[in-house]
Image: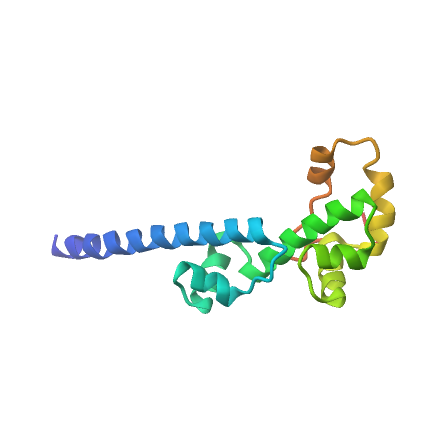
Length: 155
């Protein structure tokens, strides 16, 4: 009986801390979703919720399946896909519009997530989503996370 009492005492505070951490992680994720085009880094995100960068990264990965920086890049690539489908901006303009400062990093990450380079995507996207409502086009062209995009040329 005494062991059960001790377990409950440590479980209560641990559970409360876990719930507080989840709320902080949600705030970080919401900030990334809202401010994806701004210069964000893990240290600034962590400071914003009173966590260390290491703790934030570990907890974010545990909660959402990827670290905060990967989540940020996924948001940026999703927005870039929409801008490239629109067709009125070039790849370099889209890169800077979504908050990336390096065209090389942007192109590499885009290719990893989408399976084709941004220039190829831009050419193909206009044809693939022609006549489709924007909300449907966004859903069917959403990138696959965690490097699961099929290799180019495979179905």
